[in-house]
Each structure stands twice: as C-alpha cells, then as structure tokens.
Amino acid sequence: MEQLQARLQELAAKLNETFTSLWERIDQSPRKKKLMLYYKVGREWSRIHIRRWTHLFHGAAAGNRAVGPITFILVSAALGSALTLTTLYSTSYAVVVDGEQVGVVADQSIVDHAIATVENQGSQLLGYDYQVEAQVDYEFGLTLKSDLNDEQTIRNYFYEQLNEVSDELRAYEVVVDGRAIGAVKDENSLSNMLDDLKDQYTTENTVKTEFVENLQVRNVYAVEDLMTTDEMRQALEANSTGETTYTVEKGDTFNAIAYANDMSVSDLKALNPGIDINRLMIGDVLNVKEQIPTLSVQTLDHEVYTQAIECPVETVEDSSMYKGDSKIITQGEEGEAQIEADVVYVNGYEQERTIISSTTLREPTTTVKAVGTKEKPKTASTGTYSWPTSSRRINSYFGGRYLYGYYDYHSGLDIHATYGEKIKAADGGTVTFAGWKGSYGYLVIITHDNGVQTYYAHNSSLLVSAGDKVYQGQAIAKAGSTGNSTGVHCHFEVRVRGTAVNPLNYLR
Ligand SMILES: [Zn+2]
Image: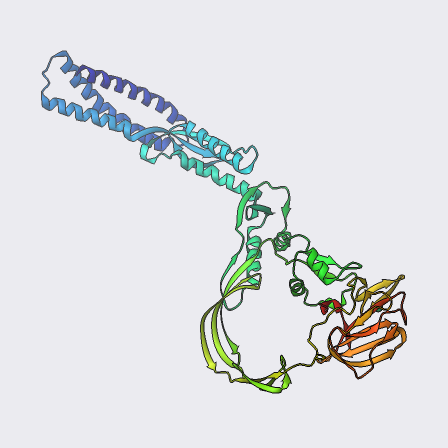
C-alpha cells in the first residue's frame, strides 16, 4: 500500500511538472487554441482525480481509516485510469518539412533516423553520397498515441524525394545472358524497341514469341555512357559469331575455302545461294558463317497448309534400254494433304516442325517407270569422270585468273603431263571432234551419253577419229604442247550444254 501511494505521489508531481512545461510551450505554439483545449481537459481531470486518490491513500497509510477490500479495488481502478491517461496521450512533435506538415512523431530522433536511413539507401542506390534536402521544423504538441506516426511514414516522405532524384539519374541496363550490353535512358522507347524486335518475326500464325537468350532490364543510376535506343538495337542485332565473310583471293577454290572454314562444300553452298561455285572470282565475298544476332527471337507458329503427296512409283522392265537407265512412261499426279503443324522459328529460320494432323484431300495417282535391263557396251557413259592423265598435279585452275598482269578467264584445267604420255577418255562416249583447232592445238572432243562434252587439248598426236566410240580410260591422244601452250600439259574441259564448268567438280 505504501508503495502504491509513493508511486501515485510521484505521478502527481510528474503530471504537474508536465502541465507547467506544457503551458509554457502552448503559449508559444501557433496552434495554441487546440492545445489549450487538451491542456484544460488534462488539468481538470488530474486535479479532480489525483487529489482524491492522494487523500485516500494518505489516510490509509496513516492508519486513520482501515482500508477495506472495496476501497482497495476502487483505488486500484483509479490508479489504472491515471495510467491510462499517460498511456493514451503523448507529448508530440508535428514534423514540418519545407512548410508542409508530413506527420506527427513522439520524438525528433525518429525523424533523424528516418532521414539517415533514406540517405544511406539513397547513397547505395545512386552510387554517390546522397543527402536529403529539406528544411525540417517541429511543432510541439500533445497527441493521442494512436494518432502518432511511425518512422515508416516519415521515411516514405523522404523516399518520394529520393525517387524524384533517382528518376532523373535512372537508366535501364540491358543484360543478355548475364552480359551487360549497355544502358539507355528512356524505358518506354526501350520497351517499344524490344517489342519491335519480336514483332518483326511475328506473323498472324504466331502463338508465342520470346527471346532465346535470357534478357534482363535492370535499373542503373548515374551511368556515364548512355546509348540511344537505336544504338541499343544495333548492338542487340549485331552478329555474335565474329567475322562471317571471306573475300576470295588468288588461287582460292570453293573446296579449299570450305575446308579452311571447317565446313562441307554443301554447307558453304547453302550460305551462298547467289554464288556460282564454278565461277569464283578474286574479290568475291562469301558467307562463311551463319549470322547469329546477340539477341535472337524464337517464335512458335501454328500453321495450316496444303502439301503435295508424292506419287507412288511402279517400275516395268525394258530390255531395249541399258541397265541403270530409266524412263517415265506415265507421270502420276501428286495428291494433296492438309497439314496442321506447330513450327518453331529462330530469327525467322525454321528450327523444328511438329505435324499435328495430316488429312488427305486428294489421293495421288501412280507413276509408271521403265527400267533398262540390257547390258551396257564398254563405250557407254558411266556418268562419272576419271582423270585423263596419270598425274593429278594442276598447273592452272579453272576460272578467272591474272596472267602476266592481265585478267584471263580459263575455261578448263591445266593438268601436268609428260611429252608423249597417253591421254585417256574421262568417260565412255562418241568422239565428235579429233583434229587441229586454233589455240587448242590438236584437240579431241568426246560427247558422252548424257550430252556432257569433255575436251583434251595441246596433244602432240591423236589416236582416235571423229565418230569413234571410246570407253572410259581408253587412250585417245598423246600429250604435247601444240596450239597456244607454254609447255607440255593436258588442257581438260568439261562442258555442260556448251558451257565450260569447273572440271574439279566432276573428276573422281
Ligand atoms: Zn589450259
């Protein structure tokens, strides 16, 4: 009981002190009127209650009056109320930043801490020592504790300021598979550009479009080397496989270029659809690698289309035709099917096609093909071409070349030969020319069964005459240096429909 009384007296003294100091401050406060009201209510309440309790306790402690359980309960309840007063209300500071009230706090240190927190995070975010710029004033008051603002509210105010600063400094860095490409200022135009990259591969059949690489756009601040959106687009479309072309030099052949670039001749052909491999010229630019942009777009298209159904082929034997030869007797008509497929493209190139359904719209009709059964004569063409010389050393290649500083087109292959050596037919056929022909000197022309012609020039003498049937490997002439020739060799040509082509693509 004595303990209670002591606490109560302490409380009364403290309240009195608080009210006195409050009064002094209220008197100076611009919000005097409102605070006066709190003050009056508080003072009255305390005057009535505290005195009564003090009196009651004083009596009890002095033993003037016995304190019954009822009294004790009452006192305890009253004391509870007093504590409630201090529990409900708190002295407070209205926080005024640049003339605008942003909250009410119990302690100024809350504001200091909020500012320190925002400055710390701002500095981390922006990469330099960030300082909150604000004139902070406080107005003292008394506030229901439940109306006090916490630190977060004050922080939020300063975060907004930070946000305005960071908006100005924020840039958007594009990262592809973990590699930073660069940063741009304008988020909208970046986003539009990325959409545009995707859109160029999007068709009315596209059901899904995505980047192949992992693309991230992240906020960066105070970047020095900003890119324009166009520069970013160029960087993303730039080839990621390094040098992709090769310029043809003197002495190059299509085969050698393919070999040097670790690819097959057919792969090299596929990358250079516009190039005639038999007429490679110095200075021609060949694609030697596939172009793969830094950022690739993969699309999934759902396609419905019709496709031809091949004709089944029926063969009939024909004893009037040579073995290995065939002839179409009845050409069937292709059928038609409707195909439904999912097709995956990367940068517009098909990667994978999954047929979902195939419906036959029209059945094909049968093609009838006759195949020969008659034994071929020795002089029949085999369709393959063997070397006309014992040597395979090439003195001069087919195609464009510079001879004594002048451009010259070489229509054949100059193959090393020794004087008088036997020149052999590259394939079976009929000799259609054997004689002197200008700069060719003594020349043999063999016309093969498929119409291809082979030329053998600069011979010293001829062993066949026009009209002779010759077989593959048969000696047809002796090597020499007749006509326009700088030494003993065999000038060998292959002509398809009258046009000279590169013999190296035919010789086996
Ligand atoms: Zn020649």
